[in-house]
Image 1 (cartoon, one colour):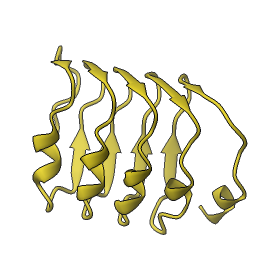
Image 2 (tube, rainbow, N blue to C red; image 1 turned 180 degrees about the vertical axis):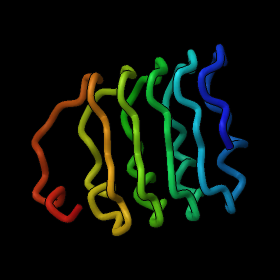
Image 3 (tube, rainbow, N blue to C red; image 1 turned 135 degrees about the horizontal axis):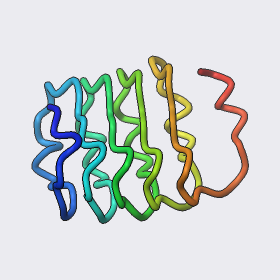
Length: 115
């Protein structure tokens, strides 16, 4: 699903995460706000998640670790805070993770060497 580079506003609806066969979710370069829903973990077949360039806030949900086939994760240029959940570093297929230009904090986990 590609809805990037529009003027979409508001929060990401939970109903988007009720499509278990979804392989790509591209909502980057919009004006989306609010948290990344914890129900993102329902997308167990997801390969690519592009949410960069929005106004997303809150923390990165640890449930994203349930997306066990995820290869590309791009969350840069948002207003995310807190630590990067350890569950992300345990995704065996993850190749790219881009989270720059947020307000993330905490220590870099040793699990990140698993990429």
